[in-house]
Image 1 (cartoon, rainbow, N blue to C red):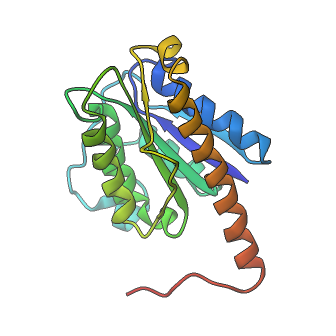
Image 2 (cartoon, rainbow, N blue to C red):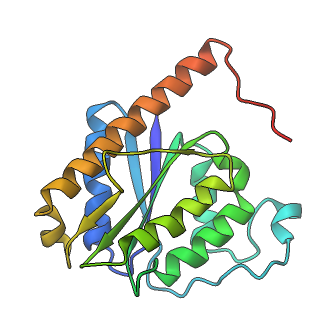
Length: 197
């Protein structure tokens, strides 16, 4: 069992990475492995609506999006994380997710997904809502916690001082691990997923 995470911050080891690591280390306690991919600082092109992915099964731009899609085929759950910039997600993760969910949407069907945001002070609910739109359009299963999936802090050290935020990430991980195991039990007992039109 494995969860693939995407760090949508231009800071490789900043607050978003730290929050994802809190989730990952909690997942490991329940027998679920994890991997964090980083969008990086290289500009990520937005979707150009060329529909090439419908024929080839991958995005026409060969970058982090196709790397994520290739790894996603072997994963049981996903977490997308972003810092909050101007009450929104980072430009990198927005561009990447537009293309990921266009080219690889079928991989997320009936799979657990969680989104998290890290903010200095405000704007987190807007960014969190923005990320959650991808779940709703792909027949995915949203993983909840005891509060919205946010951590407060300017940097990695500060977010770890957000005790409630750490608990939220840990609860999210427990819920993710539980849901993955429930889905595996359902599948092994012949309970398939719904046939949607």
